[in-house]
Length: 202
Image (tube, rainbow, N blue to C red; front, top):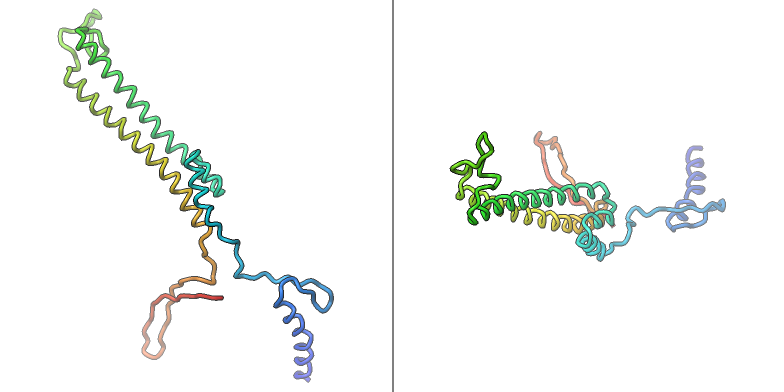
């Protein structure tokens, strides 16, 4: 009795199984059966990373928008804005010390770093010497150059990030190709085995 029941069950299920092997086939009862292939994936676009890098080079953050990583755009502009801020601040301070040093070379003692007494008269000797003004100019000039290099580096990282991100978006990480660690317990000699398993499925 049970074997007849299994035979009838197999006879009714087998046609659906055969029809399910083809995409979008029609079953016995006129119902469309759509089978999604787990190995199918969107086609790889080799120009996508180049486009993302070009967009980020054209306008910082545009490549991140192309990759749909919108949360990175504020980070890009905050980093670039920080570099530009330090450049402008160092440039402003450098010009202050440079102008004061030029005034002293011209014979004036009225610059902001000379200093005044209680009666608002210039001091007999400056509070900040000429050598100190020269050292300050050198330091601020170096800091200004570093700020430029850092800003250029952040701009380059913005382009590289967009390019690499576009590559990773097309990277195959499904279960058909995977390396997995495995842990086995050998019951014969009571030892454990550690290793990696490479899975490649067609």
